[in-house]
Amino acid sequence: MTSIKTIVALVGLAVGSQATANELDKRYSISEFVSINIDSGYQQKNLNSVVGSYKLPSDIELIGQAINFVLLNTGYELEPINEMALESVRLLTKQLPHIHKQFSYVSVENVIQTIVGDGFSVKFDNVRRLVSINPAYHTESGIK
Image (cartoon, rainbow, N blue to C red; front, side, top):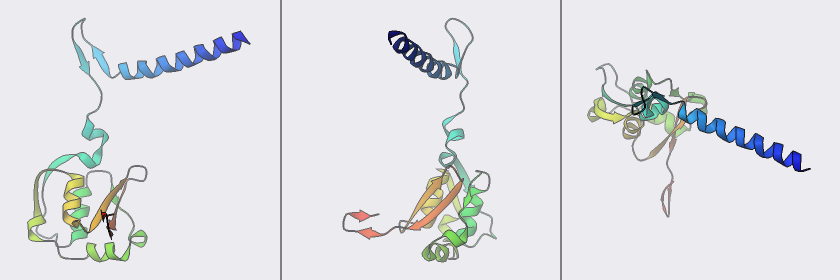
């Protein structure tokens, strides 16, 4: 029985060591005093946090067109229309305010949230790579 406990403890130690080794693999040692971080950057891992500047073309007139333009190179897309709430579909067909034609140094998530306004919430599905826009409902404690 003691040998089984010892084996279980050693396996746990080996698995724990592997996790630590994987974390250390993200640094490359050049010398005793210098190492380089070889991990991908925060924005590469969190695509909705990519900061950029956007100047929308003059032919983009609707909110839905603007959101699709912002999502163009992110790997994300809007959820299918048939899965959206009716209020969200109506929003996408509304005229884009002129003030929303240009953004400087903001994240993808902030641009989309600004375009849709406080009346809607924006959620990123990192598994399906979909962006959903849902009406935010007012409750006694605030916006839900």
